[in-house]
Amino acid sequence: MTLPPPLMLETSEQLVTCKDESTGLRAVIAIDNTVLGPGLGGIRYRPYADLWSAGVEAQRLAAAMTLKNAIAGVPFGGAKSVVVQDGPPPRGRDALFRRFGEFVARLGGTYIPGVDMGTSSHDLRTVGSAGAEVSCTDVDPSPWTALGVFHSIAAAARHHLGTDGLGEVRVLVQGVGHVGARLAELLTEAGADVLVSDVDQARAEEVAGRLGAGTVAPGEVTTTACDVFAPCATARVITHENLADLPAKVVAGGANDTLEDEGCADELHARGVLYVPDFVANGGGVIHVQAMRSGWDDARTTAAIVRIGDRVGELVEQSRTAGTTPLQAALTKARELVTVTEGS
Ligand SMILES: NC(=O)c1ccc[n+]([C@@H]2O[C@H](COP(=O)([O-])OP(=O)(O)OC[C@H]3O[C@@H](n4cnc5c(N)ncnc54)[C@H](O)[C@@H]3O)[C@@H](O)[C@H]2O)c1
Image 1 (cartoon, rainbow, N blue to C red):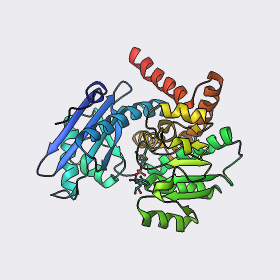
Image 2 (image 1 turned 45 degrees about the vertical axis):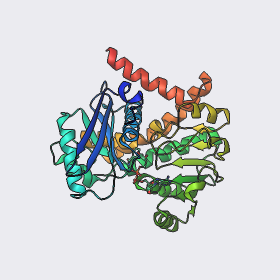
Image 3 (image 1 turned 60 degrees about the vertical axis):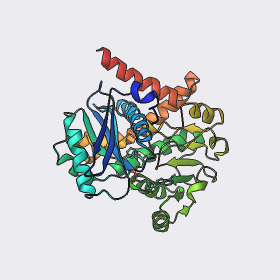
Image 4 (image 1 turned 30 degrees about the horizontal axis):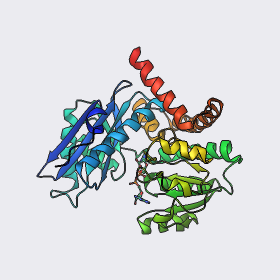
């Protein structure tokens, strides 16, 4: 048996593994930090090589949720869960998510799940039916996440590419699921030259056909010429190895945990590429969760999400003044917010 990497034991405020033979459930819940409130973060449902890699992914994503929720100004800490996909669940998908909901309910509200890759509002209702407090049961927040990413890209183009608007700006969207497809629509409406890519070729072609966009093979996303690369699929798509050949001048997308490690942000910066921290760009979904809980109308929610673009502009300017990267500026800000609250 392989021992867990040290990260597993030292990182999270609370780490829970879930196992149930009859439903085939294997899951990990990572609660990273609850200083600002209960840990809010989605349920990811996808295959993993083993439970350790699922656990590490949950922890990394949970840590990003702490930063995201702090920067977005919502009263939540950071958490995330992954449910390991391993063929069709023996008693069906609903039984799997209901059983998972029983584990979440045991946490007494310290973890509030939402949707993430591979899960839907229906799954969240199923999790909630087991007594767990959940979000995203009625409205999928993905279009709101996409709106925040769109305004991040617009701000990045303005501050880094010097363009007024997105006309003629070529944006490659990797992953055209809930977030990426809506983002591609918003970009097209704004006049951008859009390319899409998805491991689900039929989905990529459907979106491209509908929007008049081009398609890119999944293996070519980091080498295809574009101004903006918008990752909206899996984690860690930018690596030390592939960033050297990245033609884009801006990386800004909806995907969580985009970089292999923080050092990639320094390398991108040294190469003149603006990396918009993922946890800043994709905060629209958590703002929408807060809006639903607080009864905001669409106008107020939209205004709060458009503000993400202003935040990106401020971060770019702050990092220029401080001689650092936007990632470092955002990390400093988020950690201050968590620490100040902890000390008060
Ligand atoms: N849904 C939200 O509101 C939200 C909020 C914040 C962050 N995110 C993040 O955004 C990303 C996308 O979320 P989503 O809800 O759209 O997920 P989704 O499951 O609806 O869509 C993901 C898409 O990416 C495709 N894909 C998977 N691996 C790929 C690869 N290697 N190359 C190209 N395409 C690939 C899938 O086929 C799918 O079409 C995830 O990283 C998620 O954590 C989502």
